[in-house]
Length: 319
Image 1 (cartoon, rainbow, N blue to C red):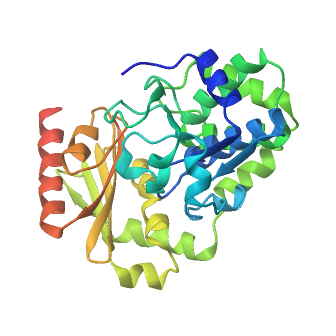
Image 2 (image 1 turned 60 degrees about the horizontal axis):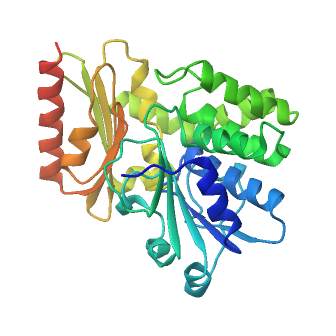
């Protein structure tokens, strides 16, 4: 897979009048942040161009970002397509990305699917937002960006690193975050309230997760199945139900944890681990992700049992 230098990406952008930015399904803060941070930067820098962000409007952080654009197939056919924060084509939130004149992938996940014509991929980076920030810094020679652009990117960086606490955070990550903070007066206290505060239904749902989680492997594996009646009871969507998987991270001796959400008779799964890789297990069932944070979709119940067995074996082999 050939990697795309920032200079060549700038040339691609400048050679297209229309640009469409895609991201993954069930978007988290990093997917939204890298998408809208890039869209905002392009709009600010090239006001004469048509720049769009597309995808379903869902996820718990959607209120912090613009509403996705609705565009025609013809618009995409005449556009440069940039896909952010998405390792494999099955997870792109709009299959029409293939219509683009040229396709660019900007991603920080392991490279498992070479679906783009051009790739800016680095799985040592903490977030897609950090990668977009580095591209912008190279393009602007460290000149500041607009407050909106900086805020979108900072939100994604903060959420994907769990407030700068994951093992891929280093001095470069903090330097990139500092660049964003220097670009505008981001209200960190207000932003923290926006990200951490939850409505009563979510508060009660998290309590349900703790009460109903199954503990296996002497407490080293924690998991829970969420059925449609629970989603309805707490006023959730299936994507929102998965987002609180790290509730189980607080259990000190937990080595792996998962949420299985029943959507239309099959299960969407969010997986996390501590100290060993699980993305290969997710890939075995058609998913993917980071070494210790992965997901997969559309599993039958027997497949979820098999996946749990694989997690148990991984826990045992890691000891």
